[in-house]
Amino acid sequence: MSQVLFKVLNLTKEFKSGEVVTKVLHGLSFEIQAGEFVSIMGPSGSGKSTLMHIMGFLDHLTGGQYFFAGRDVSGLSDDELAVKRSKDVGFVFQQFYLLPKTSVLDNVKLPLLYVDLSEKERLTRAKEAIEAVGLEHRESYLSSQLSGGEKQRVAIARALVNRPSVIFADEPTGNLDSKSGSQIMKILDELNKQGKTIILVTHETTTAAYAKRILRLKDGLLVSDELVDEAKRQQALEGELK
Image (cartoon, rainbow, N blue to C red; front, side, top):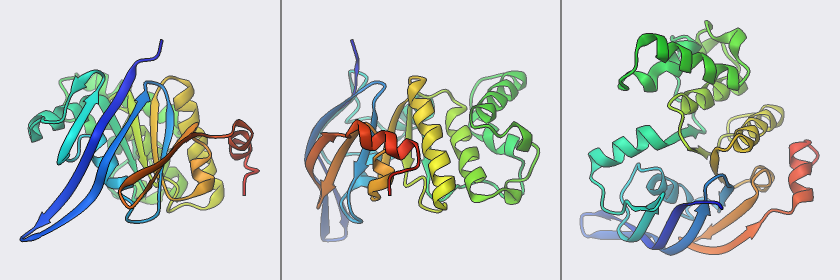
């Protein structure tokens, strides 16, 4: 029986700037099971990245409740959010955020600097993560020497190195050509097959089709929650969906 990993109830988020209050999320409610591959879709300004930041322990909600793995995490402090973030989730962003004059291996090891592990264990974990994205032959290269697709694979390896249960991917193909983007999505699909929960944030229909379920946001509201047609999903995985 699957575990409910994410549960949000009437979640709201607003930002204040002086006297101005901007309401971004308006009472979202949904559940995501452990092991799902879910896309959060919507146009620019729909609130999808704000929602990901809350779900990924990068930001606080304004109202409602948020449960992660059965625990109410709505009121965690910044320090408590940081602990959850480092232990439970990994992030992949459109901008790769790699250190350009640093090797692939050292970029991937970065999240382990503040973890209580031996240097040998750090090295083992980093090499395992690099192998998982097929870049063993590039581990001594500087990230500035890599193609865009390779840089994103390094970013995925870095997201994996703490062995999180969840990977958040925010527009992971946004800076890539279609071939490299397809390779990245296939890596995420393979990680999902291995048991990782994948939360994909995108505005692109073809990218969203790699997921198994799509939550659509519009103007801060959840307007639909639907399963992806399996035939379309297979077309996406085979590179035939246009």
